[in-house]
Amino acid sequence: MTTALTAEWLKLRTVRAPYGILLAIGLILLFGATISLLIVQDYDTSPAAEQAKFASADSSVVITPVVQFLVAALGALVATSDPRLTALTAVPDRKRLLVAKTALVAAASAVLGAVALALSIGSSWLIMGDRPPPIAPWEGLGDVLPWAGAAVLSILVTGLTGLGLGLAVRSTAVTIVVVGVLLWGIPAITPMLPPPWNIDASAVMVPYLVWEVAGVVNDPPLGPLAAVACLLVYALVTLGAGSVTLLRRDA
Image (cartoon, rainbow, N blue to C red; front, side, top):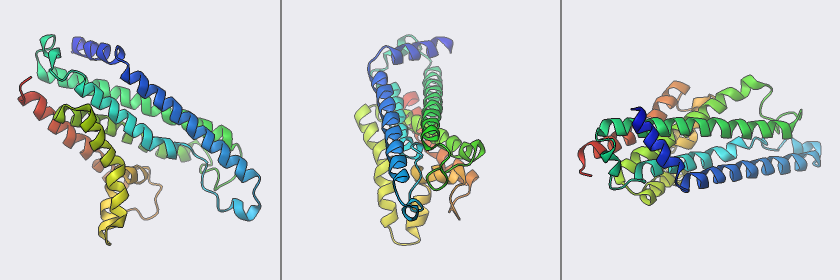
């Protein structure tokens, strides 16, 4: 297992694409901090009546969907960087190779998610200072932890989803398109459905599940535990499909 993990890590860090993903995450963090700063500056120069109508200056709300997508792309790269499965020469046990890829993507997704959320929330907190709600959505660390934990969990799930889809279709481009549809395309359509389908369908979309897991939605369709289970279904179904493909399809 150590050999398989080492080989997967070596492949990941010796190609350019992951560094491009890291750069993109850094840029979106910078963009989020800039947005927070502009919102706060506008807030400070607005009359009190207008200040009450401001949205939160928390940039993590903006960066989380983008980090989800980028980490899913990373999972796709781990799955499709070896389309002919030449790694089977070094690791002939396909189950061991699958576990190594899954462990690598899970660890990378969790670390990237935690670091991105910490930097985003930390920079927003510094920028917002002691300004009151609604510009500052938290009063203390205890208020932000449920949201941060839910966001990191969603990033972990999308990373594994990207891996599972990549193993199933063996195409980076197709996987990234499907992930984009799951994260942004379908969630943009579900609110347009007639009631109550619009609420029921939206409740199981990844962007809405993050809020439900955090427990910060008034009267949510799904409770936190049900939302966590629904998030995990995304990873389990796609990883299941990818596992069957890897274990049964010829190299």
